[in-house]
Amino acid sequence: MSIYDDLGVKTVINGVGPATRLGGLPVSEPVWAAMREAMSVTVRISALQAAAGRRLSSLLGVPACYVTSGAAAALTLGTAVALTGSDSARVDALPNTTGMPNRVIIQRAQRDPYDHAVTAAGAELVEIGYPHTTHTSELERAIDERTAAVLVRPGAPGNLLTLRTISEIAHAHGVPVIVDGALRVPPIERLQQFFADGADLVAVSGGKKFRAPQATGILCGRPELIAAVALHHQDMDEREQTWMSGEHADSPEPWAPSAPPRHGIGRSMKVGREQIAGLVTAVDRYVNAPGEDDRAGLAELDILQEQLGAQASTTVTRGFEESLDVPVLHLDLSRTGVDIDTVIRALATGDPAIAVGEDHAWRGVLTVNPLALLPGDGARFAEAFTRTLDRLGAESATADGASA
Ligand SMILES: *Cc1c(COP(=O)(O)O)cnc(C)c1O
Image 1 (tube, rainbow, N blue to C red):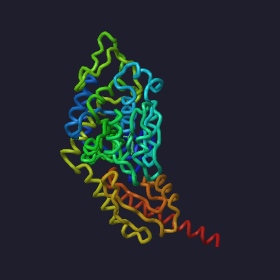
Image 2: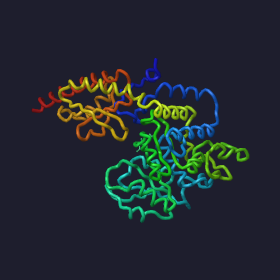
Image 3: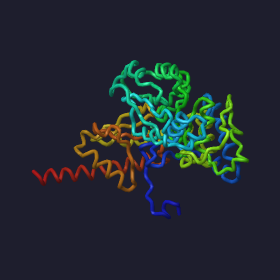
Image 4: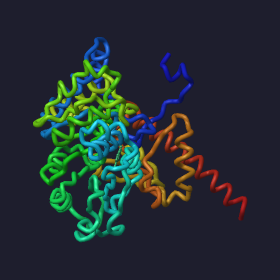
């Protein structure tokens, strides 16, 4: 009996992809094996973090890395470092930012619900520009002695300031630039380009296309900034007499405070051995066995497309999800005469339960992402989808007849 049967929880065919509300993607066997192995013996987390950081930065070709419990946690930790550096008193004070620069500037066009991860550290967001444009002068005017960082979320359309322009202006004022790369990385080339364009810190998700354990992420950045992350994040139940501050960090300059801080704001975002080992293995696989773990889901997408092709009322086309760098199916329901929200709910509560992408629901189109599809899901999806549409179509015809 599976744990889900035991608990009485229904499994779901995941046509959405790496969504946190659906628990993310399945992990590959090598990732599993690494997690199991990592949990069977004890190591110091500080040593493991430092070693994992070195391996990740060499795999990804970036200056330094730190393993977090997700890209959102990476944004909080990155903001915390921008607010405090390695000042123990400031680390202890967060999220109270009295007496320190605490403003994070963001272009209005790049606002996102994940901004909460930045304000959680104690920062205050300052918007510049308009929904589709920002002027250079608006950034120049906004930066002052209260500015702690500039947050950049690439990918939004509009005549916006480029990362390169932002970095030049911010750096001229000694202000670091934090990039939310969660929806843009991988591909790894984009991550490297962020650094080429001047990023100081980049938040990356492990649970998206890297296929690492769902609750993992990476904060990439300049070594002296990354070295300070541990102060906010690691367990500080230490005696000051024996605390080995910065013992494992690869910092080009002394960064460790003279006295240890207490548990920081990141303590509630802890990562375990298994998460760190799983993430490193998943990124290694992404780099050294490219595409291999995506193949099974893509085959299911082909099966689904073929079997739904026979469905006269639904137009099935192939799309491409640029943000996740993956092909998807678009199921256009606009000619079926059935309300799309009713279809989504019926699929979610049906047997088997199916979750579909809703990004294009406003125009009558469902999206199917292949990354989480398991062997057999394509055929099961096609059968359940056809059955559901037939039933809802018949019901709405009856209702129309009754009201006529
Ligand atoms: C997914 C996402 C995050 C959060 O990533 P997690 O790894 O789930 O914490 C942050 N920012 C953006 C833009 C995202 O799409």
